[in-house]
Image 1 (tube, rainbow, N blue to C red):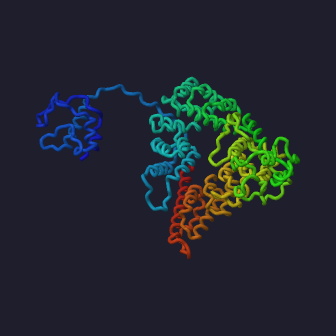
Image 2: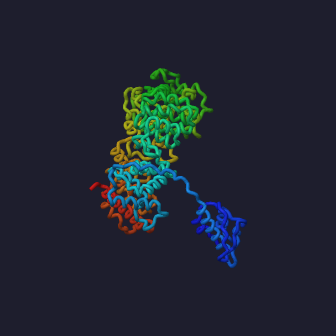
Image 3: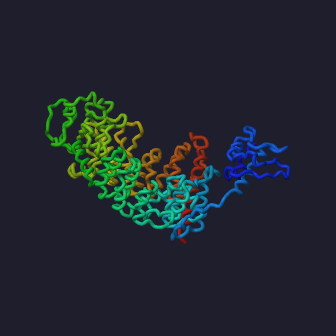
Length: 636
């Protein structure tokens, strides 16, 4: 027998007082000389069980060991309570700050309680066609914050627990919790994340536990003596309020911070980055930590007017240039070298072939004509011109990657060692082009627009490396014009893993993220209409919610086609889950017809129609629930 559960209710600490003598009731006499079992010994016996460990007390006549152990625990509890001495009361927490925002409507309060309770349930019950409430909680929080409500005080602990378990909920949950959530988080170590998580939304530094506002002197003291999470929160709030003041706060202690702390503090400058931060970031390029240097270089490259961006641009210009009437690779090998049509600052490809050994160079760094035929990019001729591009007036882009990664390049964030399977020079080239301001290419290439530049042929097989770097630069610099040009038409077949297709370097999802929401939806809708849903999951993930037309219609049509094909719906479960959260609830009536079980056709998977009907029932039910949640939150 293990009486540990009963014993746990009486656990008040170890024994500190001797037992009193009392034998009037025939109990086992205990005198001042009788040894008293310690509380730890009693707990150990209860946890292991009296059959495995003899209790440290002697049973009375006719009493079994478990009963004797419980009697001893009860006696020890009384002794402990009798021996307690009053202690000074600790000061209570300060008064919770006021939150002037309107309270949630009654129906919405009940909905939030249901969503939070479903999150904490050990498993989802009910039919498989029932909506997944846990997946609807993020959307509900966004809607509640859109209307400017505050959460009832009684639900704050459950909301903080939900945000602790799911990092994706934290920004919206802490915004809904408001100042009272931060006040409560200071009283529970499990909720310390809130002190940092709400920093980006805080208009002022997080207050001290007393609730008093931090004066400049108090702010400086918190920065110098506070916990790391408090310091990150303070820095982010100060930067949001006054970027220069926040930077001055960080500069004062920068040299004494640990490397990992410097990295986190530096990353917090990203949201409010401005040209005034450049001198500080330039100094950070000489930091002892490689990660700090890399982050400083990344932030500087996001400032097109920075000195680092200018240095990268000059290096890129020495490596990539526009030439006209360039001889083909075959002529470069057999003919005499010629300077006709060559720019003055760009060595031509024939010197790479005639003057440099190639057998000991990485394959990716060799000139195109020196590479084995099997390793040339698919769909490109020997000069890099794609057959379907047509004539370009003799203009082409020539590339000569850096010969070395010198100390200046490394200081500016160029990583010298490439990943496995990548040539050094192509690796260095990609990093240079990625950090170059995109508007420089139009300036260097005769005023051509990005859409014209990306169609220019690239000599010696460097097209994929150059375009991949332009893609990363377009995403980093948030250039919609360049992203649009690099994306091209959605009708182009997507590249699959392992293929040597010319478009394999593209990442449409990242490029789409820089486009306006409406244009994004239209591009993905056309992509789905051309290629179906197999390659559309990541593209759908970057589209604004709810999906704008014609995207919603394209997804529904593609799901209907997949159902008619007779396969099981499980391969489309990811898209179906996105549709539940992202389709416009107005689509529910249109989808109602798909909830019926269709007749099985010849060649269809057994029972597939029933599974599709169940999936569409869940989709329709979720869309209608989302419509109800929105109606509950609308102000009366």
